Image (cartoon, rainbow, N blue to C red):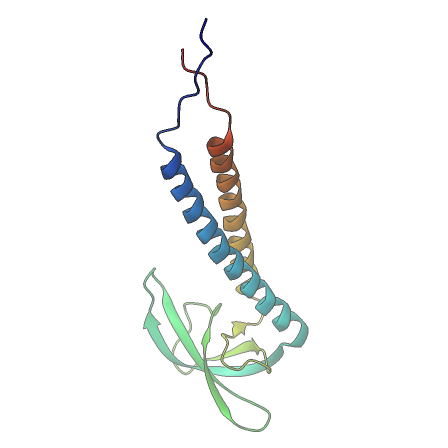
Length: 150
């Protein structure tokens, strides 16, 4: 009786392509989660509260509005920033309590009592975890033993 031959996997290159795509998106979502988490930690540790005035509203792509605020630093310089977690019902000229990072004035600010970066960090790490599971599944499918051909 002849020995059974192993049949090559015709979808191996497709699976490798899926693996490359999954690892690329894992890197992106991991970096997104790490960056958002680091910014949330900096705001918690070094955040300075201030009063800001709403000076601009732009329609957002996914509904709602992007709200830009102006606030003053202790040395009386004005800073304009996007408020990542401000309420959508704020009108132009209204005052809002914000928290900003004095070491990174180019970063978004957040409304006091409404954290936006913590949720982004959780979303980024959740996406990373799902993609890691998918990559593990694809690796299993690539390297599992082939079935013998009858």
